[in-house]
Length: 183
Image (cartoon, rainbow, N blue to C red; front, side, top):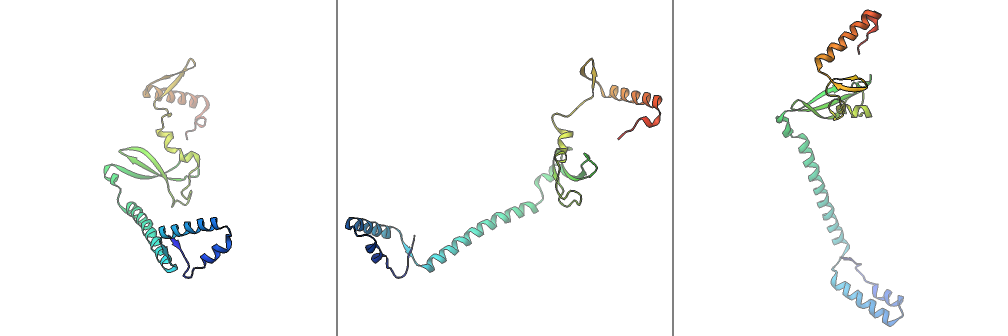
């Protein structure tokens, strides 16, 4: 579409710009071809169509926002399938930042920051962001190991608890009750 003026002074301006007859005839024929191919509109039609286009664009944008709000307000479909959100506290340091743990069928699957917490205001440090990975990551220790002759060997839970308790009792007997401190 070509936006034009109501009064056209384009013909006199084009003839005064070019004195070469070949050039002016070529420009004139191109201008005539373009004016026939592209419909013209006045200022009012341009503004009316621009307003219509902006209105359609805003309505489309609002539809996606409405869909997002409805999805956030609707109860989660997985809530019936055993998904719970449990509020907990990060134990890496003494600050005590709040964390929402998402538990699915008894397994901690992800965590979310708590934005209304007065302590951390929804932020996590690097340790807090990796909190779930410490207990459920692939590199965690899953069973007791004992160092024997420079190599780790897997031992049973009963044996590990017996050896640890015997060593703690021995230390307590040798050095007194204040020698053992449990965090």
